[in-house]
Amino acid sequence: MALEDPVIAPAPAAAAAADGAPTRFACFVAGTDTEIGKTLTSSAMLYALVRRGVRACGMKPITTGRVMRNGELHNDDADQLAEAGNVSLPQSLTTPFMLEEPAAPHIAAALEGRKIDPVPILAAYLEIAALTDATVVEGVGGFRVPLTDEYDTADLAQQLALPVVLVVGMRLGCINHALLTVEAIQSRGLKLAGWVANTLELEFNFAEENIAALEARIPAPLLGRVPRLSQPSAAAAAEYLDFTRLPNWPARPTK
Ligand SMILES: Nc1ncnc2c1ncn2[C@@H]1O[C@H](COP(=O)(O)OP(=O)(O)OP(=O)(O)O)[C@@H](O)[C@H]1O
Ligand SMILES: [Mg+2]
Image (tube, rainbow, N blue to C red; front, side, top):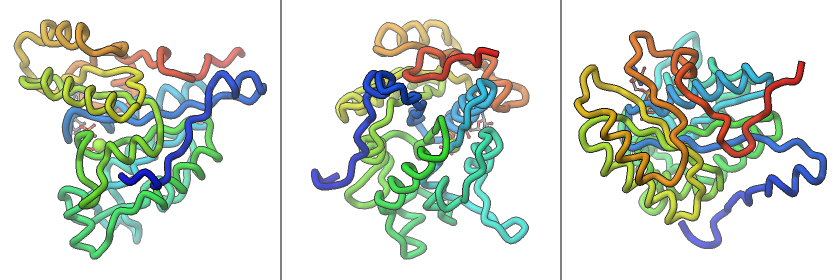
């Protein structure tokens, strides 16, 4: 990322509150890898936001792997986020880059003769933010997944300037993956707002010991442990997660 590249300046929460303007919730959901529960966690977060009565929308700026259904392009992640939120916005905003090939994003983009450009992504994010009270942005794969030859997912998170929630897929090797990702998040000057222990495997020995090792080393609250769910869904995962410690999480409706 070059210095002159765009960055969305974070709105200072205290200043917004002092103005009497409602603070809005937004975060970037990163993962220790691909297929470890980012969409499940993002959907659970949207589900919990909707239950709080706020206008919530998910964004997955870049997806790979799409199908045509009823004359419309679809991607599983984009569909799951749309289903969990309660503000329906055009796909061109929620997923500016819906790529066809289920491959690494820079490869999928090159196959279509496209280049992933941060400008439409940041513009779409601002538009979504203006139309909602809460936005959950799901990252792509692991935190350092390349998006072009000179730009990656961490650069995107940095430009969005959002607090990061890290989803750790609990399996052998997860401690190393998690700690490397935490370092990468911190080195970008981003706030690590919380992390989730998501159980993917039927049997993972010493799960508690692994979680304890992570808790001792990750300088952010554990938002919950999601067990392996027989029927994974936003609602089922939300049962195990407490998002109330995230910055600007909306208060319960008073009525
Ligand atoms: N706790 C769980 N219990 C059962 N299944 C799970 C659990 N967490 C995730 N899964 C399943 O694992 C798969 C991958 O999860 P998910 O799509 O949330 O991962 P992801 O990190 O978003 O992947 P990607 O990198 O492709 O975006 C999905 O089929 C999901 O339903
Ligand atoms: Mg996903």
